[in-house]
Amino acid sequence: MKRIAFFLVIATLLAACAPAPASEETAAQTLVTFFDRLNQGQYAEADSLYGGDYETLTNWNPDLDSSDHAALWERGCLQNGLLCLTVQSATFKGHHGDTYIFFVKFSTTDGSLFVRGPCCGANETEMPSESRFEYRVAETAAGQFKVMDMPVYVP
Image: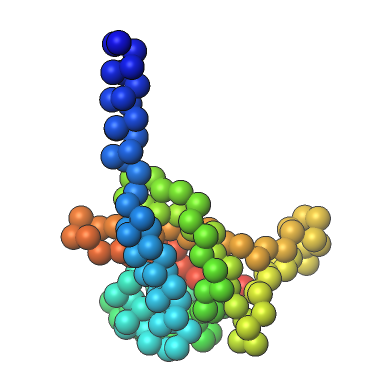
């Protein structure tokens, strides 16, 4: 009897830790909307959905005000090599606490699947092509969802 009670307690605790499907859907929608806004040049709107750091963008753009996130996103997408593509699919991988992890595939401007090939003189064996990228979306204490990772970079 004690053994059954123990397993029931464990099952209840595990169920309580599982993300609610609505939260998973909201996280996925936030991810899609973030990339849509970047792709459409709506940088301030995209920025409101971002919760990661700006260190890379500010390092790439020392001439810009580090607090002007919209300008940093614009420069990142149009000049610095960030690929601000639309999401073709976002597949839920799992979660850690309040962070949801997705495998994301992107569409090119013609609608085909984006594939990042080997970089900088590497061959396919040294640096295999990628078409699926991992992204994290965190739920804040205020219940907002924020994308934590920058777009794919191609030098």
